Length: 208
Image (cartoon, rainbow, N blue to C red):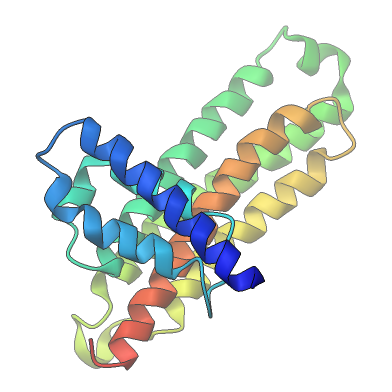
């Protein structure tokens, strides 16, 4: 009974996301079904991203490239690229928080040290995600010289380590609340991207 209830909620969430997207214009509606099916599938076994179907759908449907996506590989590329943009934005945000003469830089040395570590984490994410983009894109297209299946999810998983490291670094500082909200979005994007990769690889294994 519990699983049926969860499935019902997922369908309702995805339906509301689809309706919201459709009301924004009809030119992308032809590819909405791919996004909806993918986001619904990662909410169940074996991916268990049960708390993210609406986030998955709204994120992908807000990106114009989803209209040209052919499969879950393309959707994973889109979410990975969105994650990279967010990580780069966090580098800029941390730089602003640490600007010379600001309160944190001059009066809160503990928070400043933690933020500098977070800046390194976010910068590392940007670099890693560029590599991930190439790995995902090249998979299956360069023969034996291309990336192996395990490299795709492992690459995205590295960014989750960066996010968790930053969260741990700031958890007892004055900026913990601000950073937690930003890191939550980054973590959701990383989880969705990895789940879409897993879904793509599962389809390849099944011959789809």
